[in-house]
Amino acid sequence: MDTIISTENLRKNYGEVKALKGINLELERGGIVGLLGPNGAGKTTLVEIIEGLRLPSAGKIKVLGLDPTRAPRDLKERIGAQLQTTAIAQELTPSETLKLFASFYNHAALNINEILQLVGLEEKAHARNRTLSGGQKQRLAIGMALVNDPEIVILDEPTTGLDPMARRNVHQIIQGLRQQGRTILLTTHYIEEAEKLCDRVIMIKKGEIVADGTPFELVSQAQGMSTVWIAVEGELDFSPLVRAGAEPQGR
Figure: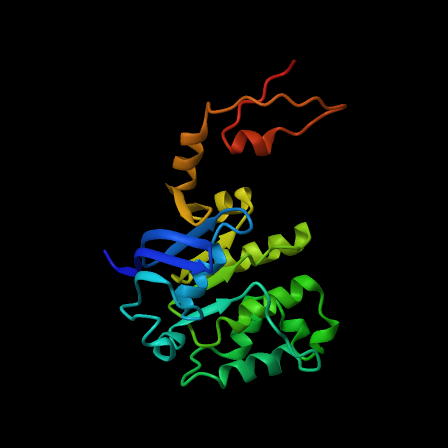
């Protein structure tokens, strides 16, 4: 077993607020791991500690054998992260932006044109960033996380606020990264997104892990827990509910 991220009793406090309450976690190399939970659950705090952007209040953490609190520069060379909010210079082009970010690393193993192709921005390579749509800017942000050919790619709610088509485009990029053999840590509050993309889902609520397993295992555990009656007019497509394990009943 090749463990690349491990935490032991990881805690983070903001004054009286306990954002993380003793997270114990082990992630193996390869595949997509989803951190699923509502806003304020602690997902972003956890990934920021993993990235070395925030110090824990207590506990231990290792990422690729390194302690992010002691070796953040070394770790930065080996991971890539798309943050919830990414500042993009509006007057640069996607090609110029990727070249700029590549210059921040000691090595930039991926070719800029390869990244543009991967994130579907070849035709926008020389357009000003200010002319890009919201979905295209999000794809550029993912491309910026790939310039150092990272072993771990961290995507923090990459589809929040995007329309359905833009979300599908981002999903295709994430699936393409998985096919390359990369390890992807994805935070989301969309249950259907976690079910569609992830090999393993870790559910976080109020700073604690409340469930951990494959999407199928978590759906199976939830089956039979609740019955919800909804009155609607006209026809309703139940297929998404069926895929999630629900048993729609007519009345």
